[in-house]
Length: 225
Image 1: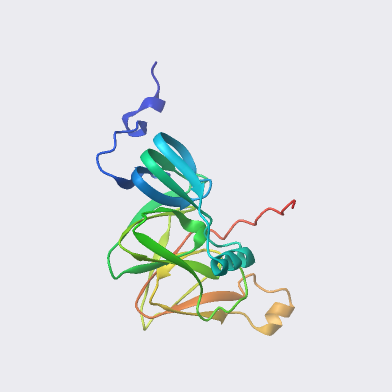
Image 2: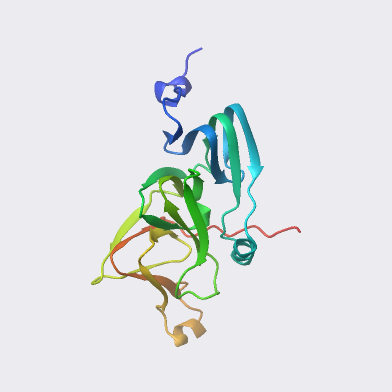
């Protein structure tokens, strides 16, 4: 049988080391020898002896997730084998976090991560309890984090002389040590006249970077429950 479908770049290669690696631009393969964590529903294939278990969260984390819809619904993958993760053909990237480093990531952009990393869902400082997408996951420890982005990400440097303002629906993540606050970019009069659609942004100050995607969040379908 002959087809471009069976081109070498599309064929799976045997894993040589444990842990995650890019299968292609749209998926991550994880060679599991023990356990790993991933967003619920992100498994697209696996082989070997693996079990998938919904990962519980503490009360505080659960409440934050329920209020914002932007938390991190996880599953644990345990055993030995290979598993492939993807989500709606989003572009995938692997971030290697070293000891002493940390990264803040929007929960909707997390695909999978090593068990040596720890995470905590935190409210964005300066953003209060208003608006979706203002609770984010802070990853610390030592290990790899699989991140996904709808479209090609834009990484913008942040400096003390040049703060950056980002749409809260487009932000993927940022350097954890940056200072955050809400910024209003339109006047009350403009808002009363219908507004520009860009009323409030997240302001980031300090030294670091912010990652945004080239689109705003898709509207969530209404629940039938």
